[in-house]
Amino acid sequence: MAMPTENDTTPLSALHVLEYPYTRSVGPVVGRFLGGLRDRKIEGIRAKDGRVLVPPVEYDPVTSEELTDFVEVGQAGVVTTWAWVSEPRPKHPLDTPFAWALIKLDGADTALLHAIDAGDQSKMATGMRVSVRWREQTSGEIGDIACFEPETTS
Amino acid sequence: MSDPVGGPVGGIGAPIRLEYDYTPGEATSRYLRSIAEGRIVGQRCPSCKKVYVPPRGSCPTCAVPTTDEVELSHKGTVTTFCVVNLSFYQDIEPPYVCASILLDGADIALFHLIQEVPEGREVTMGMRVEAVWVEPEELRPTLESIKYFRPTGEPDAPYDSYKEHL
Image (cartoon, rainbow over the protein chains, first blue to last red):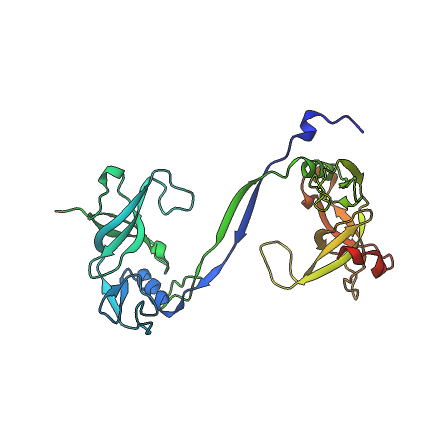
């Protein structure tokens, strides 16, 4: 056998991809919420204490009772907290720097997690108003909301 | 899948994808390079004498480095197997058989595909099989260089010959 060359003993390296192609069933309540997004409307659900929960949940977080009272909410709202992403990852909703934010839509009592295309971190502030930017083609998933953008006051 | 027509959505695609830069280490790299030459090379533990393939560079039982290289046969015995009836992404039409194959001279089984099973013959424990390689110019440092194993037609190996390796 030939003498091993340096090249023979260098550990190899290769890209290894592990992928699980799950389909997740979403249930009747989130299913209706996503169906609403396809029709470009955002629906929450009224809890037993009167609060409107967005995104909607199947059972009351306090009493555990089944919830059925859907409520359409506004397509703009207030940022309650946010985090700036200066280097977006491949699967992020935007390929330019953006903010992950909790957004309390008008008429809702809880906040929805989504992305805000603000352009620059200096444009972000807790309490700022943002409005939805719909994706051109909707298909019944959370990505139907492409992102939120700072509301332009006129 | 999301439904473009109307009404509530039943389900959403939720794939999980992890990308690794995988480094197999020195011992397994040597094994993979041997595969790229159309050979299967394991390592023997200097203490318990067991032959590991693929080699990891140490014996997990004796906790000593393994350095002696052992060239292994391309023939082996099916120790156990599984009939796959569900389709994953591979371009293989189910049903197909995945098996643990104990190469002659090895003490640990490899996992690989069984193909070319003659009509009317089922894969069994003890079935004798041999490696079918890709064309020489397609050899790469990956176990995919062995396309699959196929029955040799030899009589089944007796259970006692592989019962320690299940």
